[in-house]
Length: 183
Image 1 (tube, rainbow, N blue to C red):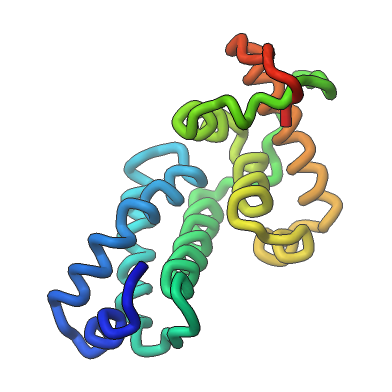
Image 2: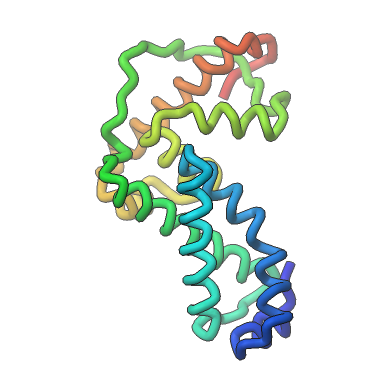
């Protein structure tokens, strides 16, 4: 976690403090970008944009408690990811796989490694992946997601349900359905 002093110094242009911040947040924010954007090049571009916004807005950041800076930087990065998806002229909510999904399964998430789960999330269609990330990983509510994406709450709930069913199918296809309950 970054200290309040480091953030204050960076907001005044201290290059060493800026470097400490960069070193602390760049990798986690890049991984965040990769959860939303399938292509590494897009994730790198969005990370750059997000970091520029973070550093340009440091003077407006208000330190509240430990971890508040990281949460603030994550919020900026998520918004940049969503803007990238919009700019790519892809409507995240328009992707509907034609396949039907099994509704029941086994809970394997606790047994999957972070890399395995990350790989599965990347295989989700863009709309499913976006809502899944916002709800399950970032902790946004359906009303917040509907506002951010310009969709109805019902669509957000539907996309989340479909994402979970799609993940179940991927887990079964990978032969990992031997645990007690999927998602």
